[in-house]
Each structure stands twice: as structure tokens, then as C-alpha cells.
Length: 120
Image (cartoon, rainbow, N blue to C red; front, side, top):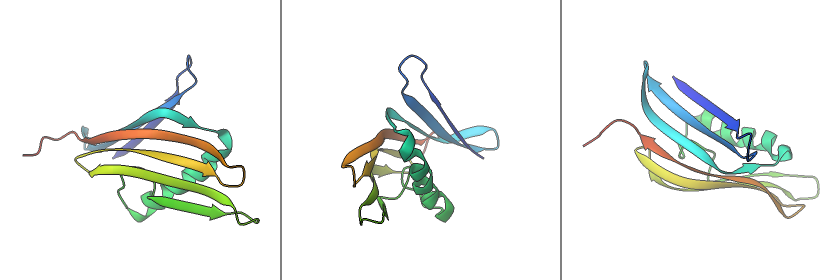
């Protein structure tokens, strides 16, 4: 079972979240993200980007592809980048969403996590 939980801190207004994979009722893997956030207009695109990897069963630190871009009518678009290092057992990284037309960042998150099962 996979559980994805997120929320917004009422004091700072900053979002954070976690994704946990369970084997029966025992958590075996976790990923946390935070230290940033996304502008409202970037959220539909972020969901689309994340679903790209989820639907294809691609693991990239539990987030989206390394690069993703949607072009607008003027040739500009929205870009997504995922820089990560490590593997399923231990990883960290950062993702950024960027509006090319307005030349502005639409948001970012740092993420980290890995296996909760001891492996020798």
C-alpha cells in the first residue's frame, strides 16, 4: 500500500508532505518533501508531471522525471527538473517548476528518504 500525505503549516504557510510504502501494515520505505512550495498556478502541472512517472512505474526518488516540458502557443512553456542522487535505499534531491514565458520559478521542493528496512 502507498500513502501520500501533505499539508500546509498554519504558522508559516509552507507545504510539506511524505509518501510511505507499506508491506501489510509495516512501513518499508518513506520519502519526505518540503523546504519550498508551489504557486497555485503550478499545481496542476506538477500533478501531471508526477503522474508521468507514477503511471509508468518509474522510480526517481518518488518524484517526477528528470526533465519535463509542456509548450505553450508562443513556443514557451512550463519546465520541470528533478535533480536527485542515490537509489531506492537512500536518496535526496530537489525539483523545480519554471514558467518560461514569465521567466519565473513556480515553485520547488527538496526531498529525501529511503528504505526503512535494514539491509546488509
